Image (cartoon, rainbow, N blue to C red):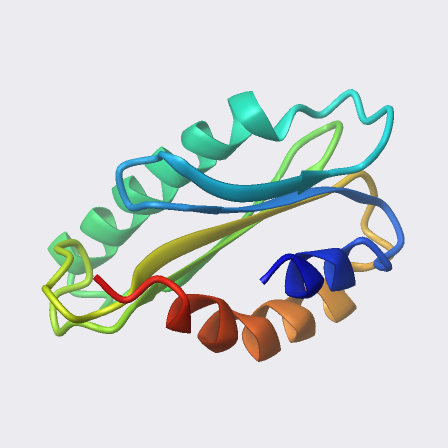
Length: 130
């Protein structure tokens, strides 16, 4: 699992990556050395934003929301939810439900980041079946 996270560190502008529970608890994380962007503080906030976006999308009949991209003055925060259950918000027994949070310090690697997120999320989720 840590090898999958290390693969994100090759993306230009990498600031950090972590896997969180739907309640915002950190499961595993990897931060760039000397990064001013602290995944420990930002991860749970990004996780909360993802849950709010999911609820808002469902309430407004936009359908399911699995991915958000938060662009700020200092960073890009990409959050991907994978829930193996039928309800986006709830975690069902025997199903994986994780949130991957990736921080980039610039926009150079956004395309590659999105590709890596999609290629790695299923592998990461396998380790977290509940």
